[in-house]
Length: 104
Image (cartoon, rainbow, N blue to C red):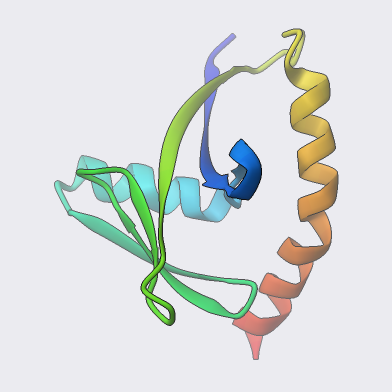
């Protein structure tokens, strides 16, 4: 089965948090088109994902965090899948808020 790509951003305490699928999609499109960055809104902040040096920059605060690509088996049979599901659950509420703020 094909592998799905995820993007994760490094957060405080050495944890990696998944970015929304919409951002991953825009990242892949921008990369193919040879663009250098992707702009997105998350949790009410404006972010720029710099493709070349793989950094997420908060445009409101100027804070920069490392981003990494993670390839995930579509079957989800990896040993890591439990950890990923946990972090997704924590992220779910935020992602729903993102959708509401983008629609308005």
